[in-house]
Image 1 (tube, rainbow, N blue to C red):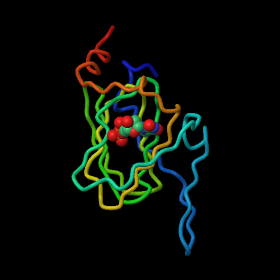
Image 2 (image 1 turned 180 degrees about the horizontal axis):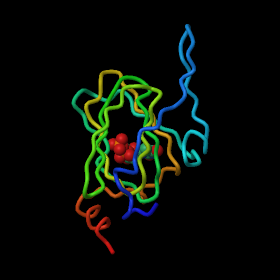
Image 3 (image 1 turned 60 degrees about the vertical axis):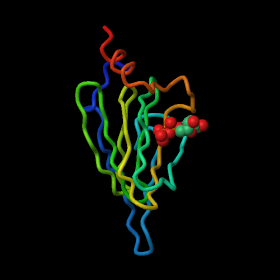
Length: 141
Ligand code: TYD
């Protein structure tokens, strides 16, 4: 989906399969089965100090699935018109975040781990870090 056309309403929570076991559970994420993109990169945020915020940008091409692998946090998505907050607190739910969506992540619980599956390798060129430029790009005809 193009940067300017993506909407918050197209970003949804995906429930992943939880394989129950008395000795602990497993959740697996299969490329193009459980996520709608090829997984080129995996990264995770951890040791986030209390009160810190992450994100504060949009991506031009990157599609992500964001998971609270441990603990909890809030993700605020913004398409320039509509905003929506998702509270992630289960390791078997992933939030699909499309390109062209501004995101902030805050309210990290102590020891939380934010796991991100990404459709592209890291590229600084893919970031839009200025909110007014983001708004201009969303309003382009
Ligand atoms: P950034 O994506 O801005 O972090 P967040 O959205 O969580 O606040 O990345 C922070 C820094 O880490 C930035 O200098 C780029 C670097 N970085 C990489 O080198 N590779 C990566 O895969 C990621 C996600 C970030």
